[in-house]
Length: 391
Image (tube, rainbow, N blue to C red; front, side, top):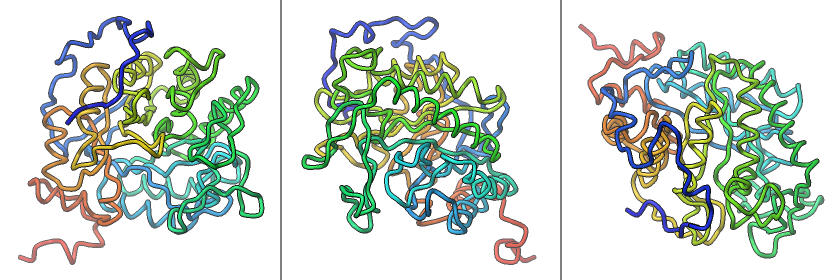
């Protein structure tokens, strides 16, 4: 599989920079780990009981951003089911940063306690509670996917004005997004900071910045959506500026013992867009700031992308970033069975495996995977009647 279909912009000096202590040609800077899917992993002061993560997945079921009983049971059942890290879905740092009116939010102090209830339960089951902080940018103000996911263009439809790096809509015919000015960018950084403080007060021990899937921070990264001519546009170092600024601000707020993740789309799968070479450079800068893991996804910036979807199709992207940027990674995307997930870890492709839709289909995937791989699954004691062998 080709790792990227985009063309390198060789005129950008940032693409040729040398990175101290990590040669892009050194394949063994991170050794293949003597470990497997069931082995614990420690990042900073947090130990994950295995390498299995519940990937953040929008439920489009909140009211004014408030977590509900649905979210408690949905997320809590995967902690009961044996995963090491449960990541709450993309949680909007501002009200107009929601993808849909049903998105989770953390833009007021009132959002904290419903989220704290989830974090407490997840942690009580031996998993780590994490949360993904997000702003949807030009992909905000949409209907839920089960009603078609179309842009809500008017207030009467329940929609709102959206913001972006440049006045370029995601779909032709959609209202133009409003470009963020300098004050708007400062306000966005402040919103991520405030959301982080609330997430920490709610008890989350992993914070993930969402800079993938065509949402705001990804929009700044890609030249397909960022046509700015100021310090946030043009050259790679400018397009990276907002994400690096957000990451540095959050790292300064998060206690040293807690890890910070960033999810990126490693490639737009579109000519002239964001690509894997730029992702490696970005990941090196994020590592220097103190980011602990890159959660490697891809695509979703433009609706015309040609994505080579297949089993584990994004795993090579995670491997490349892990080895060339010398930073732990998470692999995600069409990972469905235990042997496949285990080989991703044992082959050194990534340090964590993020499961998404497979965990929607099977909440107890991690427990069953432990059995398949010869481990001792940590079934909850109250389930013992069903899962313990009779003597």
